[in-house]
Image (cartoon, rainbow, N blue to C red; front, side, top):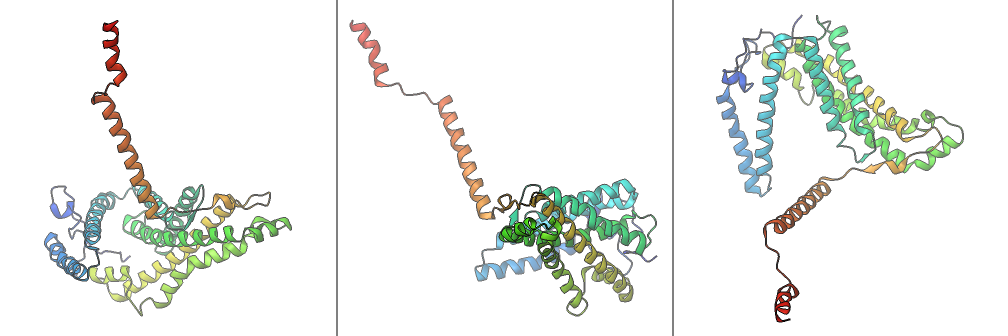
Length: 340
């Protein structure tokens, strides 16, 4: 079977600078141009150009651009170091643990995007990320591509990453829409519940709207794919030396997997949220739905907390190391006793 990358990996050594930084061409095909440290150094010229434009226009984003670029380089380098031994040994339990770690990080990232939150949202996001995207990846690798073994890291890890990356957006959009509907349409839902409707019947409209909102970006991407832009995976395969026809087939499989993962993850997290916020007694726990703290609120609270801690520390140090001034009554007391 034609793989995502056609050449075998070279031995991995910690003393090889390019491998240590994840910059080597050990997984590149013969047709791919090798990328080393100096190639990336030449790429930094583009970053310098962006910094010059940002400074010239007074955008005030130079520091953010530098930090983001360095973070991307460090994170991708660490990813290359981590994946190298996983790809080399290809043990099912190592691949499973890494995919589980990816799903947990995806869930953690998804909870910060909706405008509203509620108790238990992290657990629900984790359940949705652990089930739908991972299941769709397993179906794609095992039944569609028929890779042997199913946990082949060459297929499982990249496909799981693409599935989870898109599922994060779907879960956050669905939760945002659903929580808004539950909070603003509380009276309507409780009226339906009082009339004898079940939770699924009373919240069906809100759930349908949430899943529709979550599906919209993926469907829009499907309608323009190949016309407006060449997708990332197809681009990587073409650069790696595969034929455009083979890359297009793989890309179509990936797009369908992403669509299924997004729909299922949005449905799972929406149903879990309804189960947590709509009681069997016919009440919507709208008071449990609160607005997410904004970045400004978070930074303001952090500054106030740091200032409070510094104030307590200053007062403690003053009490311990600075001699306390004696009151006037304490200074006059010995004199009065001597006079008597």
